[in-house]
Length: 162
Image (cartoon, rainbow, N blue to C red):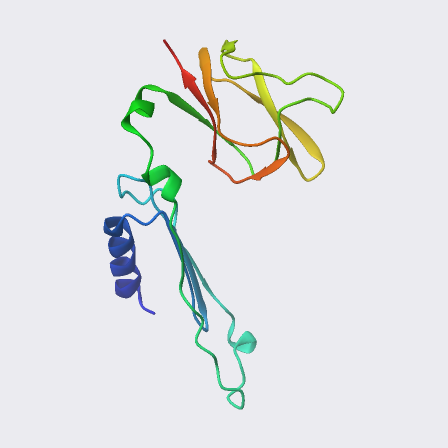
């Protein structure tokens, strides 16, 4: 796959409304992530395997399928949520609403928060990272269940800043 084909693929994905596309072929892996506006927000990763890692000629290579993940929740977001600020996960890990099982939750729906308040904890590699609010406002919705895995940049909370 040459550079021109990769650029055409990026343009196609950006215009298609798909949130993420992963393409794996014999010697190339490509992942393209976009926003709802169609702008490519994450770098396209292209990894070519070394020549010695390629399959020997005696073994017939199998075509890898193209995996397309469509983020339907984000595409179906109502326009009324546009006035809210989304607090997103800064890391990959496990989302916890409490500092420990015997303690109360950090915040509830309807709670007023201030800038710097701890909203949750995300465990990553046995480290518990406190996620602090960067805005002041009122928690409108908690988008993740307690003890659930979260991805980088995944929405966690909706905050009404007014």
